[in-house]
Image (tube, rainbow, N blue to C red):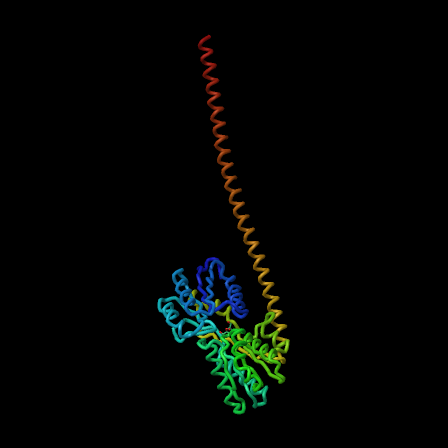
Amino acid sequence: PSETEKKYRIGFSQCTGDDDWRSTMLANMKRQMAFYPGSELIYKDARDNNDLQKEQIRELMKQGIDLLIVSPNEAQPLTRIVEEVFNKGTPVIVIDRKTSSMLYTSFVGADNQEIGRKAADYVGRLLHGKGNVIEVIGRPGSTPAIARQQGFSEGLVKFPSIKITSQVYGNWLKDDAEAELNKIKDKLTEADIVFAHNDLMALGAYEVYRKANINKKIRFIGVDGLAGPGGGMQLVNDKILDATLLYPTGGEAAIQTAFKILNRESFLKENILQTLVIDSANVESLLLQAEKINEQQRDIEKQQGLLERQRAIYKSQTILLEITITALVLVLVLGTVAFLSLHNNRKINRRLLASNKEILLQRN
Ligand code: FRU
């Protein structure tokens, strides 16, 4: 992007900013924004609240944004307002969670139904086609929960001897997952595996089982597979989870798509991000890779800081140069004026002297 490129305001309405997955998404977005100096990202966190999110989208529209990125907390309640934004001519990028409408400019995110199917496949293989599952579902009205559940049950059709014995709604939250599982304490022992729709709820399930002192090997599977400390990759590496399904945040892709739309370049309406099962077979190499990428990221940021400093030095030096040149011109002009007036003075003096002499001569 060049200096002459237009500056844009992008509004980002996030359903919640509380967990690591969402803060990773935001960090990735900000990192991409650094490539578009002058453009800004206005961020709003709806804290799991549909009404608050609607209000925040209205605020963003009032502030005047060129494009909206939105991850709707729940599909149905947010559909009208997002359609409204789209119909007013503001481009809309839907990220991770969807509304119930096709009225959006572009979608960025993984295929959640596929995640459900892949989880079912993995469960089927792990249990050798026979056993009981407890499913911990995300927030009921959010599209990833609906799609993961659907994909999971579809995937299990291939394994008729695997039964989902209980389903609870954990609303994507660890505490809610624990509370709901504690309500079905008597059903916990019949399960062989718990499939939770994210790693946080999977960890919650693991802790409920640990505290219940159940003497049976239970396996836990989550979704997200974040790389950082406490993330899904580490949980797999620490053998707390048997597996997790990588669910990329799409932060970078969303910003890239946003600028393609704003600069009227070609873009895809559906940007489907890749997913993959992370288990003991590949977690080590994935962690290593993530660390390498992190390192490179830090280097890029260092270089960006350096560049920024150089730019500031260049700017202050240009100003100094301009002042010096102005002063020089001023000195030259004033010098010339002084020289000319000196010259003039001398001429007048000489003339005065001459006329003085003449007067004296005449008097004598
Ligand atoms: C984070 C999160 C993720 C999950 C996604 C679904 O807020 O709960 O764990 O994969 O949202 O939208």
